[in-house]
Length: 633
Image: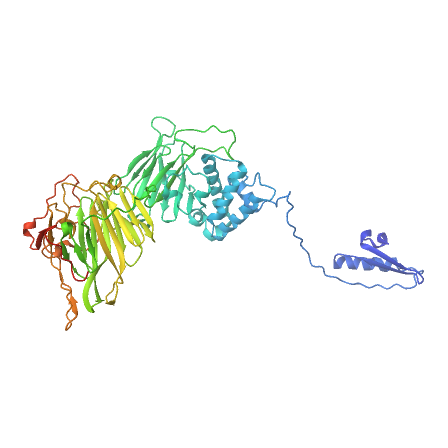
């Protein structure tokens, strides 16, 4: 039958019904043209006289193509996606070589490529794939890990630009930050490779792939959450330039800050070092050997020792994925480098016998037992302490409140504090805290604090039991007290609520206690000893004049008057301070310059004490009469 109809035998099915001798033939065809041919053949084959009847019925069935998808068997990873093939074409490297039975590399590369094509690469996915790739190769040394990351970054950039050319267009794609690979360096198991916090603490390390000539390269740092890694060819050529690193003002606070890179070969063909010349205020200019860093207060440049030890070359038996291993690596980051963790601060010492302090609204307690009240001007800053390398200022704010008698007081409080402490390097560091928040901010003020008008924020701590240690300066926030020690001084600023407030902006106030570190406190080895020859000044610190004479200045009268239970404070410590209150007033909180400044003096300098003969306040010696304290206390 199949032969007579000219169709394959497997397409013909015959059913024979006994008794009536009925033969039913079902014939499958695939197209309309085939149906016509089979119909003609059936009519010819069944047109014999011996056939009683012949009935022909044509039924057309439209079949929808069915696609079957099956998960890969454990022993058979899925076929390589186009990205794997394109990476091979672009770099000559098979990044899927050595994949495991589960297709870890295939799936990771697929996800990563899709992210790049969407313009939303994820640091976590690129880091995971890079780790899996390095693990599959069995690489353990930093040199091989870095080389592999650069190979991958180069390949993924080329593949992305090939596929997304219509989106970016030509050279615009290669310059786009969206096609730059980034990894979390802390996950790459290279703990000793990068030496600085400003590199290893960043959420992302951007792999900067060279486009164009090396000497024309520009590496930009404009994201505070990124560090950058780039490669330097160590083969000698006619041009020794290796590019320019530019630091954005947003992360350094300095306009047009950049460093030019030049290779140093000496008289040989071996790269001996990299020279970086920068235009920062410190005029940084340094040649780095492998493993060295150019470390400034606002940025760091590290010549990475990918060999695991400075000046040491590894002899390794396994080979890299290609033969081009002629690159060294430079990592750079911006921000202030936090120093190593400080030692645990000793327990707070016992308060001195005659603490120097400012309390409540505000009442000054001076050395040798003297007292005075100080109202200040609303919103103004006043210098309390000025000593070699030490500046402390506080801001007064007007407030109206009730005392229990009841007594209505139109007064003021100290609500903010600002310090400038000179580090061992000569740089000035500003510290600011507001009574309304449990926090403090630290600023870089440049050499000798001269950049006080443009402070650069370098750190902020929020919450209790936080600390920061910079050079010889210790800053601690305890339960409610900011403690600062440096250059032979200690100051404590404690926040309190303003009770029974009626009017005025402040809700919280600061009380201060400060003292000199004179040699028996236990803090001198870490924070210095106060000068014995340069006597301090400021509204409070000038009382440290070593004459043993207490001087009381002007004080407000808080005596209760039933007919007029109101007090308007006005005392400005007259009689207990040199000059007038306005002589201690500054408009910028970090400005250390005023009529009696000691900040720029050296500890070895001689700074005269105040002339107590010109002070008109009540003078007395301890033991002769108790100091008078204002009625508000």
